[in-house]
Length: 154
Length: 154
DNA sequence: TATTGACCTAAAGTTAGGTTTAGGCTTTAC
DNA sequence: GTAAAGCCTAAACCTAACTTTAGGTCAATA
Image (cartoon, rainbow over all chains, first blue to last red; front, side, top):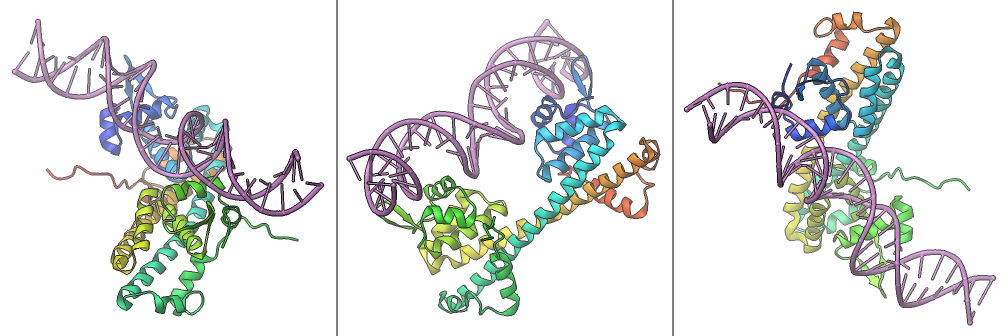
């Protein structure tokens, strides 16, 4: 069993954040002795999951839902599996987007390296939409191939 | 030249957001005719960069700084290059963190698939910290190897 | 002529995820 | 016995990034 101060140290989270999570219902089964929170191994694992789900883009309210399912027992295994499958897909999509962002950033790094060498952007502007060096063209095209919410058809 | 409504359509962004970006100084050189904003190719590329930098975790204020450097001319090429190098490193780090998140999610998917088959978690709890199947153990270890802000030494 | 649609501004409102403040208990060190 | 540490609550406050509201201009269409 750990106090809130110990858990704060272990996870590098402010005490106020831990209390906030508790108030939001993220530790539905946490014990108390004369008002003082008792973090057990169960709450530590919950905290690991909370950090994971937060980074995966999930909101506190949905995480609360999950923690309640955990408290409800084995009948909610399928719901919990679904949730993790969903978040897995969401993170995979997020990583694809970040790869595109990275391509844009790499392109810009190349671009400004050239601009510094040339002292201006005239040569670059001439190469611009389609006459870049092959490797750079790939980055540029990937970064600029907008996957907009198309209106398409008709 | 495009109107704000056209740009809103093209990028799938609300008009209010475009006006907000303008008010925050993200289009320092945008033209107007009798009060009406004229988005040129320059502003469209700016918008692509804005979306990229935002996804890379940068705040509006910092993006404004960058846009001002662009308006200042060739003397700011080195600053702009630095900024992109920095953001590139930030995104690479973010992707590493997301990979860890993904490992945790994959582990949990496996875990609940097993739990559903077994009907309970007793078998899983016995395997738990170190006796998981090799592939799963990797995921678990990677997800649980906390890179906390250690106090270390002494 | 009047009404519709697309643009404009300034200012107030919203939301999530915390953080801070103010006041209070309880236990251990001097 | 008193004061410093560590715990508690409720409620107010904060920030970023938008969004909404209220009121106004202007051009083209019915």
